[in-house]
Length: 254
Image (cartoon, rainbow, N blue to C red; front, side, top):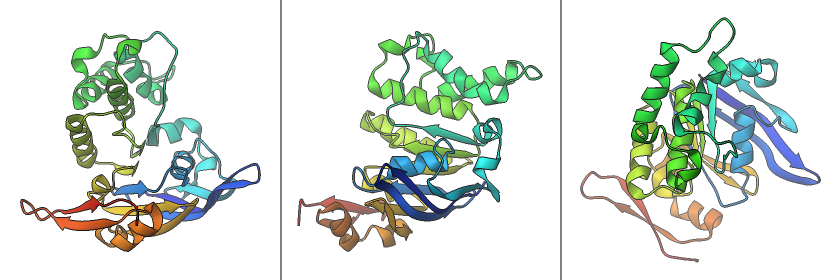
């Protein structure tokens, strides 16, 4: 399903955090969002997910304004994995993932075998099935991140929004989670710190000072000039001889 930001801004007091961003992410696309800390990425993702209303502009889910759609239907369509989601509840890993089924449950649609299967599939996808009975509070940061992703997968969304999902993960799980995301038959919007990870996206958008300053294919958008202007580092584009992939090597401040 297509998700569109139409001139959206968000203001905290007198400070504009996101300024007049317009963006359309097509059905089935993997869209990477990059930018320096404080550039407005997380705020934009929350607006796209429908959990923060824009100060101006609008978000469209398909052709409908997201504010006109019921919260239940939005939650059935969009799943958001935030950076620092946590809980003080004494719950197990399975309990946390089962929360992803909440939008699909009602008095007329109680918990069923279908829900059990969705939870089991989500735990298996992130490699956490063996820890399903563990208490949340005994997990490492990386394990908690994988559970957050499993909860989102259990939600069975059409659109998956992830805010730096590889934070706290070791390199093995970074690669496995990114490969999993790439295989999912959903529209994906993912904020990333690692520009080399962003090179694998269909398109990339660069945030800087609250504005979306560039959008396009990674090889075009992540140019050495743009990286130096936005991130204040010099970069060299290299080609991996094993598969021809373009990689970025960084050399410090210009």
